[in-house]
Length: 369
Image (tube, rainbow, N blue to C red; front, side, top):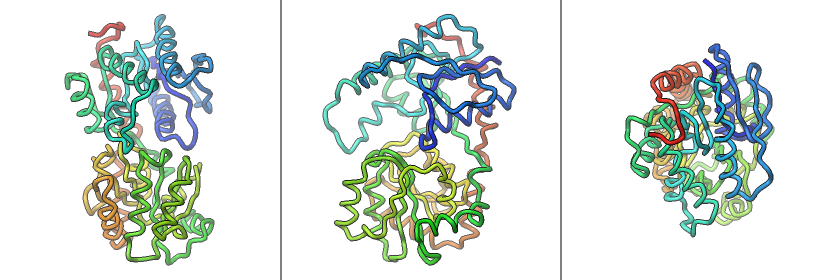
C-alpha cells in the first residue's frame, strides 16, 4: 500500500513526534511504500520518502492556517492509496487526533483567560477537519468521546487506535544496566526513592501538583526528578516555598529518558489534559508504575493498585497516597505487573489496527460527506 503520513518534524523530547517516527518504521517493516509530508526537517527514517511542505516564517495563528492550506494543495494531485494526517490539515482520508481536541484542552486549562487569535484559528480548523475528514482516529476512548460530544461527530466515524511503545528500548533490564548510573549522575543514593515526572509544558502536565504531592510524603527519602522543557522559575519558587526545593532534581529535556524510568520507583503525571501521553506506556514497559490523572487517556491502561493509580489532577494528597502505596509494594511484583501491562502495545499491533481502519474508509473528496 502507498501511504502518505502528514506530520511535523520530530525531536527526542517530543512525544507526539516520537510516536510518528516509530509508526513510520513499523509501516516500512510491514512492507508498505511510505511517504512523509512535513513542514520541518526530521532525522531520516530508512525506507521513507520525505516531501517538504515549504511554509514561510509566519506568526503562530497564520502558520497553522498556512500549513492546512498548503497541505490541501499538495494533496490535490494524489497518488497515494491512503493519506493520514497527524496535523490540523485538510483533504486527508484519515485524521489522527494525537493532540486530542483543542476545544477540550481549553476547557481543562487552569488559566481560563481569553482566547486569542491563535486559539480561534485552531478551533476553526478543528471544526472544519471534523466535518470534512471521512475517518477520525482517536488515541484513547476519552478522546473519542470528546470529539463526538463537542463536535457532533457520529460514533461510526471515530475509531480508537492506542499508541505503541518500543518494548526493547523501554525494558526492565535497564534497571541493572543504566538505572544505577542515572542515580549516580543525579547524586541520588541507593536508599533514596525517585518519583519521576516526564513532560514538556509544565502547566498542562501538572508539575505543580507533583511538587505539592512530594511535600505531602512522610518519607523524606523521596526525591522528585523532573525531565522536560519549560520555564522552571515559578516551580522552583514553589518547591522552595513549601520546603522541598532540595528534594527536586531539575534534569531538563533528555534524550536518554529510558535510563531515568529505570532509576525511578514511580512515575507521576498529574496532567490537566493528555490525550494519551507516551510516558504512560514507556514507564510501564520499563517496569515502573504510573500515578496519573483522570484527564489522561493513558489512565485507560492503568489497573488501580496493580500497575498504577488514577487521581483527580489537582489532588496532591491522592497523588502522594498513590506514590506511597505503589512504592511500598514488593519490587519484583511491581516491575512485573507494570511490564506485563505494556507488552500488548507493540507498533506491529498499532499498524494492524490502523490498516483495519484504512481498509473500510471512504475516500476523501474535501467536502465530506
